[in-house]
Image (tube, rainbow, N blue to C red; front, side, top):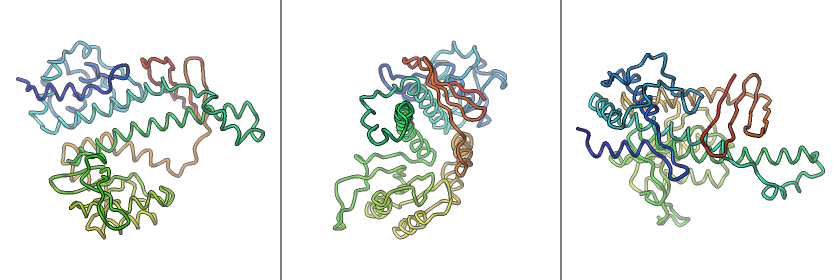
Length: 352
């Protein structure tokens, strides 16, 4: 018997957004994620309808969205999906979180492909005044092209940063047993120039209420990573955590040394906190436990490490082409085409 609570949870993690922006994972996509979770954790599936040859199942980071999945999964009912989900949870309780996080990543990936297909071309009403800074210096046709592309890329990048913020920190926080807390409900309050606590809260990347720990996540800390005002905010965070009765813990996923990182370390340690940089992933996996450390190793850490390898690489020459119904990016022998349907029904494809 499937509990009402599990049914409600399943319905919630399957959907994101409302109205025309609503995304609901299909039966095939849900079956795919359940299959991946079971395979990752070496668990036996109970429903024969889920059992297909492994060669027919794409890896999670297949570049095609939506992925090409086995046809037999298309007709699975919600009840059949729930029975399998419940079965796996009974075998390994942390499958609930494992599967939920997989759903969250896939939903955000699908949503971002929809953003790419819909993001409108900037108008000269929006960007024309910016030509005053370069008119007569840059040839006119090139200037119009330059203004259009950089605004469109900026808008897309802004949406990408927004969606990543909604995804990365909550997923990482859930893996180590905490939750992301917004400034409105935060127990950490800002301290003013007179050393007094105010009523204004500080956003917390991960709050472990039971252990009374406030975690701060950073991909990397460099000298140029933040302006002086913003860095002063970062330095004040551990002090404000201590005042709130919490232990501040900084986790830096890229341990590249910098003067800023050394200064942050001193600030956290002076407030009774900890800093994990060289041992960041080991620390996270220890906190996550066996099941969720597997999730981190399969779906988060490899992506970040592979992208970090490009940090000191000079970017390749990039060609951008705006077609009637698509936009194509090319670098070297690789190409990526965004289908511009305007209705979000198609996302992006790649070759190379």
